[in-house]
Image 1: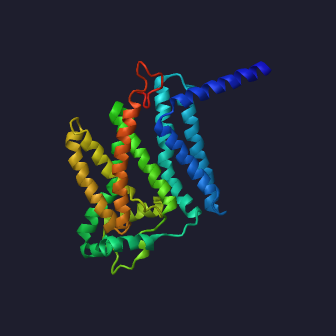
Image 2: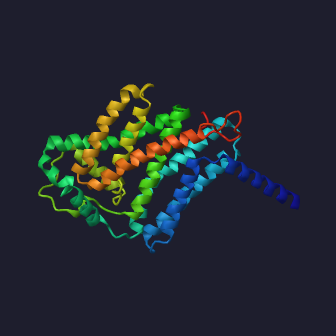
Image 3: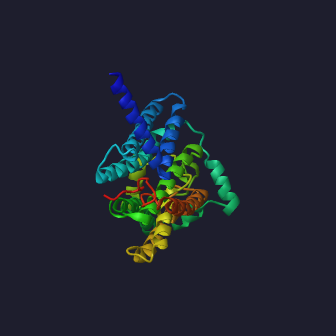
Length: 322
């Protein structure tokens, strides 16, 4: 029995050692992110939201940690099984963290900072864009911008899901590293700079005159939105980042013809975030800054990590092929 215990302990040390050697930059960031969310809500005041959020945050941390141990510790020996486990175990908790925000942010019982964000807009522009955009409050305009705002979710899925399972090499490393930084930075800042946006802060002359697409946006925000998730605007950061990524790889297809389309869609989404009264200008500005920072980060990480798995580097590749 003692011998079995020693063997198990030795095996565990080996797995941990291999996992530590194989950890990628994005793995460490993901673990730190989920640990932060769990610790942040753990010290929140007692409430039903805090209880639920604490359990969910811990579950996401455990799922990520277990996936990394299985993959980076090479407990799973098959390359394809390991590659699939890594993709699901790293990305799925990141996606679910957005839905966690719906209970985690209210659980923190934050003091909303909308008036301070509005004050920044006043200092920068003399007003906030959603106020002077009231002159555009016509049904065709509302529907046009609501459509693009709603398309954000389609853009997110089309850019990330196929790449996750089909792309490989430098382009995949850049795309996913930048996307991961955006979600981590965005969700952490939500807990530090909470706000509800102009729609909940300012008095407008009239409600928006929308029809089908505007009602779809309202329904989506009401049922799935995190509500206090305005600073920075990830509706700005993600489309802008995808445009930068596509433009950087415009010499290869499909990015040669895709980047102008992404740029057009991104511009409309960014305008929509303010026109539809969800975001202050400073939210959008920080979203753009985050997109450019994510691009720089992605390039730096890809340069650092692309040698992994080579003939002189025993470390596991960041993204093994499926």
